Image (cartoon, rainbow, N blue to C red; front, top):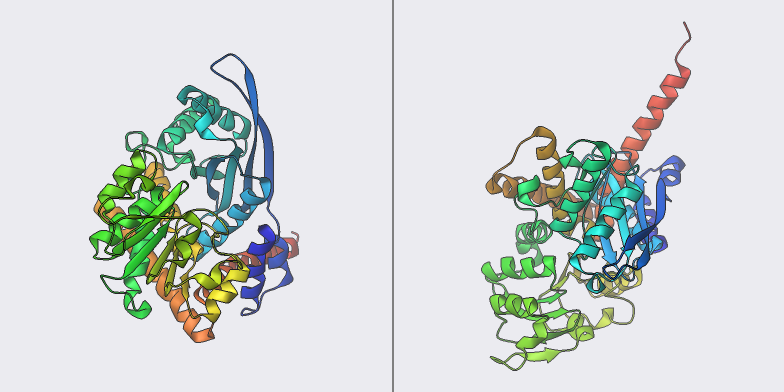
Length: 420
C-alpha cells in the first residue's frame, strides 16, 4: 500500500523542481512504534492485540491522525494512511504532519468494559509517542468519541494534568468541537457544491454511496437535502437500490437496526450486491468505505461521471488510469475527505485557547478552507493538464518541499555561522 501511495508522490514530483533531500525525507516514516496490548477480559482471561502508531513526517508541525480498531489493520496500512495524512495536512495548509494508529482486533467481540481497557492500554503503551505538541490522535474506523474520552482521561492520569488538546474527536462536554461528527462528509459536500457547475452536477443528479458509516450517512443527508437523488447504498452486509430514490431517514433507521439491506422489498427498493455498487448508473459515485474498492478489475464498469473519495485510498493507481481514460473526474481523498482533520485542527485550537466556537463559525471556516484549496487544485490541474489527484499531490508536495528546503537552509546557516 505504501509503495502505491508513494508512486503518486513521485508522479507529482515530475511537475516540480524537487531536490533529492525531499524524497529522502518523505520516502519512509519518521517513526513507527509497535506494541502488544494485553488486557484482562471479562471472564478473567488475558488477551493480547498487536498495535501501532506511525508518525510519518513532522516538518509542518506535530503529527495528526486517527486510531482505527479493525481486524485487518497492519503496519503497512498504518504507515500508508500516515503518509496520506501528511499530504492531506500539507494540501489543506494545516500546521500538522501526518500520523496514524491501529489495533488489530474486532471490536464486535469485546464488551464495553473490554473496549475501555483496550483504549486505556493503548495510551499507556504509546504515552511517550503522543502529546498535544507532538502527536494528536483522533477517531477512525470503529473508534468514536467515547473511546477518545477514555484515551484522553488515561493520558491525563499518566501526565498528572488534564490535557484536552492531546486528543481530538472527544465528546462536546469534554472539549470536543461542534461540527466534528459530520466534518468529513461536510468538507466533501462543500467541495462538491463549490465545483458542481464545473463538474456538470445539478440538483436531481443520481448518487450511489459505497459505505454507510459515519461519512456515508452524513453525505447522504447533506446531498439529499440539497436535492440530489440517492439511488443506491451499500454497507458491509450488502446494499439496496431504487431508481426513484431512497429515503435517507429510512436508510439511517435501517442501518441502526443492522444494515441498509433491511429496506429491500419496500417502496420499490431492490437488493444490490455490494460489489456491484461501483457499476450503478448514476452521475456521482461516493466512495466512503475502505481502501482499494475500485481497482483494475472493476474500474471499467464505473458509469458515474464524477467520483467523490471520502474514504482513504479507495481507488488504486491502476484504476486511476482506467477512470482517466474514460474522462471520469475524481475528487481525490487527500482533498475531498480533509474536512475531518480540518475540524480536528479547529478542536485542537479551541482546546489550546480554552475556547468553544459556535457551529456556524466551524462550518464557515471549514467551507472557506475546502473552497480555497479546492480552487487551487482545480486551477493547477487546468494549467498543467493533469488530473485533480495529481494536482492535489503537486500542491501538497510544493508546500512540503518549501518547508523542508527552508528547514535545511536554516540548519546550513547555523552550521556555517562564524565562530566568535
